[in-house]
Length: 279
Length: 317
Image (tube, rainbow over all chains, first blue to last red; front, side):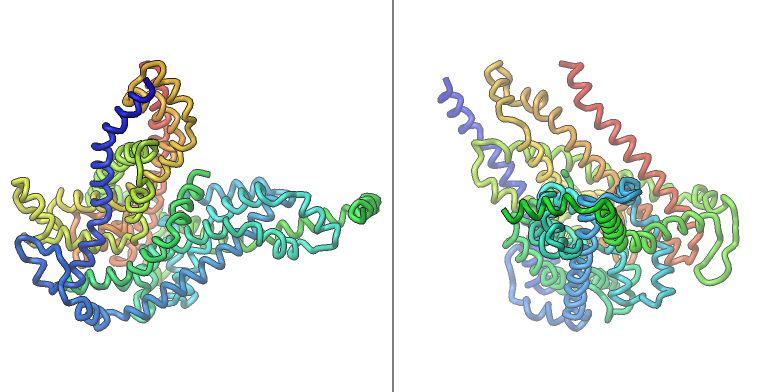
């Protein structure tokens, strides 16, 4: 009886494989097609039947990108922005998470609920005053102005509090106190090493968030020298007649680094989603 | 041994020292949450409150503010373009997210079946679109759905005998293209969340149902969906909030014509255009306040509707 059931379900898997295969194809095709167009002259776009195999213009198209936007400058700006913001968010979140998990102080619960409430406020609500503030500080067209907004990350505190209260035993902290450790020393030498996995999770969330965010960067970065990748790429599409080969070449080279990182650390990326949202 | 002695010593210390220890912890607590709340005050709370104040002022960002009462709200609410942008946002949101959640559940269900192999490969490929930035997605889809008659999208629909569509300038063309890119980028993300949910459901339940003679479809409807409810509520909530904030995809997809056409203008684009193209910070802030109300309302309604899913099923069974 059991064997019969197994046989049945095995035979029934073919349609499921077909559906999953089709979905994979659907997911991967734009990546492949982006690569194909990045290697073709713009005219290939108009051919019928459509061009689906790579051509020989890979370098030429990218050269055109370099002539149009400060690509490497934008790449560097993006990496710098993402790295500094990520490190800052990790520091701010883990300190606050540590305090919420392990210390008692008046108003703690109120402050924590306040943090949860900030998660519900849509970022667009403060857009105009934020822009005004940054312009008054003279931080328009600077990575400082682009980055400061991302320091506000309530999810980070939420995750860190959760992780620290689950994985750092109170006894360990008590023992360290008896040994005369200062609270900061406890944070630095005991808590930080334990919460490394949570750092990986939150780090991936923040890094990809800042890498891909558009509205704020588009609002404050108007000078091409200050462009991040997203703003630079979007500007490629603003010409009256867009060279598709060049356009997709820019997108391709801006996407490749992230895909490589993703393919290497895909387990971390995928678990960061469930850690970040399901908890 | 030494440890025990030390602990005993610590216990015997005076009350005063315990108090100072407590005080130290209190100071540390405040000190460690301070960086976040300083950041929150400056770039979170202050701008949010300032926005609400601004909604009742006339201001171009340079001169004096002038209190105008509710007139910014009246201006926005009487602007047909505001209502068009709200309509667009809702239509694109529905088309982009509702199918995504349904497909996500089905894919997750398949990926969770014990008989299916290569699940890691499928998981990684289906999730990959999420890694690409919204701008990159909008540009790639922008070429795929270009306004040329020879656009690849037109070739594809031509295979089914459909006439070419001018994707960037037609009412439904623009909406479908944008909804499709939202779908493409997020379907894997939701699949992963549902998969995490499915993995938390005990296998015993399915075995018991099989013994009772329930087929796979019945199991899906009566076991999987109800137990997946918290995850469904979560994704519906996130999709609702996200869809109402749509900005990057249509803006980048339409390029130079983004703020001059209305087929795919969303509420956030309308807000942005008011503030930064027309210099009217007051009405833009009124729109921001309206958007906040809309988002809270829609999220509440959708969460309430989703919470009803399992209950109805139970009554039906």
